[in-house]
Image 1 (cartoon, rainbow, N blue to C red):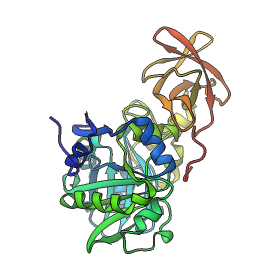
Image 2: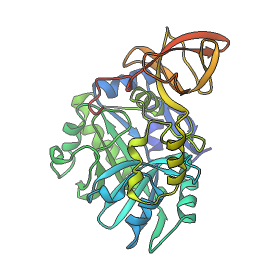
Image 3: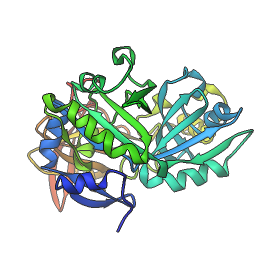
Amino acid sequence: MGKKTPLYEKHVTLGAKIVPFAGFDMPVYYTSILEEVLLVRRRIGVFDVSHMGEIEVTGKDALEFVNYITTNNVFSLDEYQVQYSTMLYPHGGIVDDLLVYRLPDKVLLVVNAANTDKDFKWIVENKKGDVEIRNRSEEYFQLAIQGPPAEKVVQKIVDKDLSELPFYWSTFVKIEGKEFLLSRTGYTGEDGFEIYGEAELGKRVWDIVFEAGEDEGIGPAGLGARDTLRLEMKYCLYGNDIDETTTPLEAGLSWVVKMDKGEFIGRDALIKQKEDGIKRKLVCIELEGRNIARHGYKILKGGEEVGYITSGNWSPSVEKSIALGYVNVPHHKSGTEIEVDIRGRSVRGVIVKPPFYKNATHK
């Protein structure tokens, strides 16, 4: 049996199919993955993401230290602003991708559930300056409310004007007199909010959110829908599309790498990779028919192996079979026709510009 989030009983009551994920027992779907993907695209879905890791960095050198262990520029953040970033090993491979919150009294790092312990150890091992590092993951619940009417629904339950909260910003709000951290972020491409609070308040907030969203057709969504939604947007999944063997430059994440900000772990390796020329790129592929390309399947060009699939699934939003994969340069350009070896059959595909789903609230 895995660990349980503070909302586990809610999932069981709703009849969710529970699967082991990142050491937790998590809902993969409630009705079906397909229905829950369309729920988020057309109406509003709620994800329990309490399994995610929350690591807090405090002390007078907190900003400088987080800037050293991540690739994006932490000093470009105003208070309450959030940024997407990566942490790298010295060889340029990715330790994890994460969100960095600049809060008045701390920097909050939100990391992938499967990597929380590894990340915490890595951060502590690289500690510099006057900082204190705490793994607070067990103390938090986290809800993600995603879909076009997200602002309208969440506005009903909080005491701040959400029309003034831009994408990738956060604020503290009160819900029934108790304080929570609210951010306008997400992993689906739709407008959405994430609520962080004390673990024991999770079930009550879940109920409040569902009451507020009843008129908008709110429903729960599981990990299966989350995975498909992020794939439709070409958002990377650690362990599939990025890991210690891939660099952010190969993965199309150079926009979160600020080479000119000064020293950070992995910088020298990335500079060298740029100078030598990047040999492969993570690309979007649309496949013929309903064939699903799975992680590890070979990508071919004229019968010759030129890459491999990292993620693949049927997309209900675009009604196509879609996949991500690393393809060797120069075969990585949009419009290039390739084949994917699916269990010994060569299935035709074409490389397309990201994202697959073009009508999301936030591109």
